[in-house]
Structure formats: structure tokens, C-alpha cells
Amino acid sequence: MNRWRRTTRTGFTLLESIIALAMIGAVAGACLQVRAQSLAGQQRLTVHQKADRGIETILRLAQSGLLENPQRERDETGGTTLIVWTGEHLDEPFTCRRDRIEIANPISGATAEQLPENVTLWRWTVTYRGESAETLTPTGPTR
Image 1 (cartoon, rainbow, N blue to C red):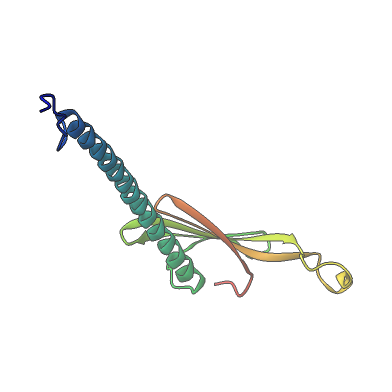
Image 2 (image 1 turned 30 degrees about the vertical axis):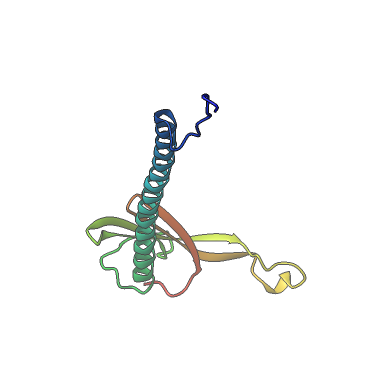
């Protein structure tokens, strides 16, 4: 008979268990960090989208003539050059400006003798919740 019989190991040693737990903990920590960054990014996006919707609403109200008591500046000919609305939207202050600008006519070329050299546009600038946006529209009747 063989006295020195080889025994087989079953189970894990304490060191192997600790290493496995440390690896699981590192993976869990990384997943939690990614999740936290995702939530912070989502919150920033939500705030930005609210500001965009507010700017869009204020712009539409101004363009449709529903904002009250604008301040007007006129040029030498008596034409309106700048209109400024100030107020609050959803308890946040805003400023909406409309001024007249002239740009070179983008439709110039073969039929340039029939078209004006410059085109007059309204430039709308809305500032709301620390953000600002600008858009151009064709001039129409002055309100």
C-alpha cells in the first residue's frame, strides 16, 4: 500500500476568495461611477432642453405680438430699429430683442438687375436662463 497518497483539493482558498471579491468590487464600483455620470449628464440635458423650450416660447410670443410693453428705439426717419421686451417666464427673467439688419442679397447673379442689392431682416435675440439664441426672419409689418 502506498502511504503517500495524493489528495485532491476541493473548494477555494481564502486568498482566492479575497481576490475574487476585490475584482467583483472593482467592477461594481466602475458600474456605479458610469451610472452616476449618466445621471449627471441626463440632468444637464434636461436643464438645457427646458431653457431651449423657454427660449422658443418667448420667441413665438414676441413674434405673434403677445408680449406687452416693449421698449422701442427709432431711427431718424421714425422707423423702428430696436424693440426690447423684458419680463419673466416661469419665474425666470428673460430679454427678447428685435432689431433690423441688412445683409447682402443671397439671390444675386444673372437676374441681379431685378433684385435689390441688400435684404432687410429682423434679428431676434432671446436671453433666458443664462442662455442666448438668435434667429433671423424676413421683415414684415412693424408691431
